[in-house]
Image (cartoon, rainbow, N blue to C red; front, side):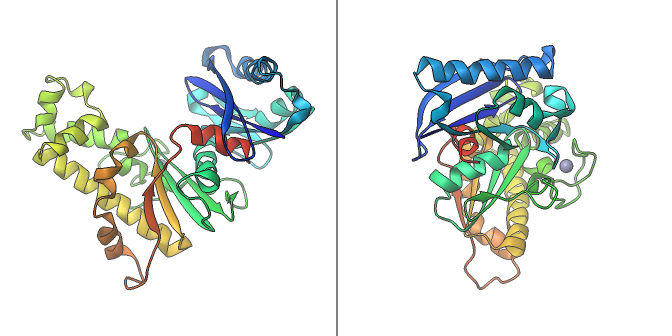
Amino acid sequence: MYFVGVDIGGTGIQAGVVNEFGKILFRKECKTDVDSGFEKVMNDINTLVRSLLDENNISIENIESIGFGVPSFINKTGLVTCVNLGWFEVDFMDALKRRFPEVKVNAENDATVAALGEAKFGSMKGASVAVMYTLGTGVGGGIIINEKAFTGAHGMGSEIGHAIIGENYFDCNCGNNGCLETFCSATAIIKYAQKLIIEGRKSVILDLVEGDLEQITAKTVFDAYRQGDEVAIKIITRFKMYLAKAMASIINILDPEIISIGGGVSRASDIILKDIEPIIREYVLYRNEDFAKIVCASLGSDAGIIGAAFL
Ligand SMILES: [Zn+2]
């Protein structure tokens, strides 16, 4: 038996045939044709999956289930609203079932799906309670309990990127102020670097982007940090403090065995995870007890396909 996982992103859709051991055997991708609308994207997904199977001589009867990771929240009745894809309350689950009547289909938020992949086959393997933060343009989250994705009573749980952990100088895309996403995403790092430089701080960051503030990326800031730049140290210290506060809160609430960080920002995990445990300990309630191991995700972008396959 095989499993199929499909990772739907704002620019591309990736599909993979996965075996029972979590290995991606075959893969195929296509562009996300956002401008042509929901039905066209769903037709493209149908074509993508069926051609992936045909090209590798796999009959759909040999597929246990097809799982989908979506960059949004899927409500209890299967409706999806996703600004990036231009979808407003589209009947996603119904559209999937109509296109794949022969096989069981499942779908979840992409960060939850990535967490499931890491919990089954990656950095959080074997943990009974596991939490993953996907630190990218935004901050996604996944909570996995006994190898099952936990999304709460209404399907909207696990949004730990929107845990409100402080007051910030700009509002979150969700309309609130103080969400983790506004402190610990790539966007947050870039915005804070731009703010400090505009306020007149001297920094190598500006040299690295040849004076163009718009060219600053999270990587620029981490590169400057490695050179001992004071502004970069200030940015990353703030980033780590808020990440530690968020992790301490999740430890107080869920007491996970393991917490993993993934996403583009986690490429600098050597800097992010170095000495973060004592900072977390300052905010944990039971300071003398052992708490979750903090690790870096190990499956990279494959976690999306692998996790989706095992929903
Ligand atoms: Zn928010």
